[in-house]
Length: 103
Image (cartoon, rainbow, N blue to C red; front, side, top):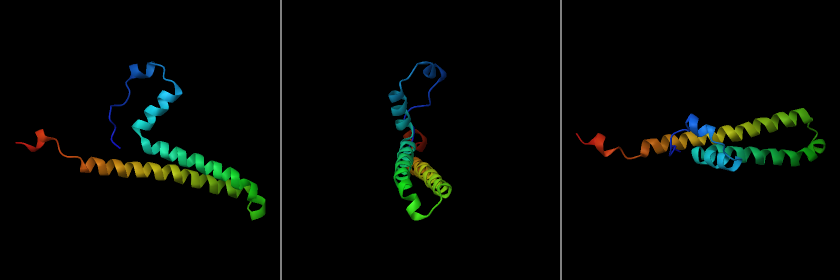
């Protein structure tokens, strides 16, 4: 999505932000990143729960962790790619500025 305000200036960085304020600002700037982080967290929780069944499946722990890492990275990359597509669509479908269309 298109940013509603410009990036923070150096003076704004000097002001101390709490964790909640910083995270809500980041969500507003890039909502698909938070979606990717949520997917990453879900993947890690699901991987932790599946780790118990690891021995019954006959898979070695190193292979399981490699597969889990690839799946988690895919969740984040997919969310960022969706964000880029949504931003490109929103930029191309915005109405043109009236001052540029009138001659």
